[in-house]
Length: 108
Image (cartoon, rainbow, N blue to C red; front, side):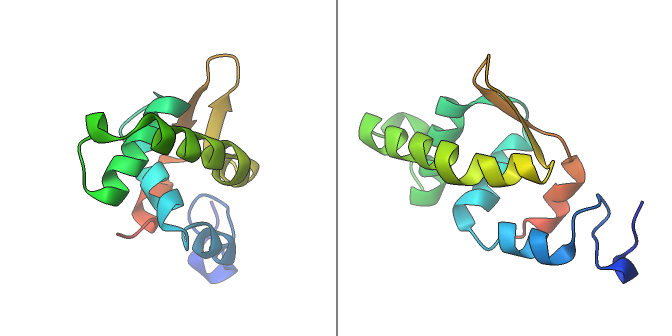
């Protein structure tokens, strides 16, 4: 396990990469949602939009959900899976945290 002196956080990802990943509020919310367990991409998109807007998940419109799904697939999941922080199962359309220790680095 790497130490903080090496520039890596406790799960082997360079500190600069973690800081860059979590500069995005949407990515922090996505990881926080995954901290609650494995979820479908549609459910994650709904929950992320709801948290961003301070509304109930059932109040997220289909258009808002689809825009978030597209962004998760195109932007956020590729970066989180490339670093080994998130595992994505394309057959099931689900994601889960591969590195739960990352939760202590997402801030608020």
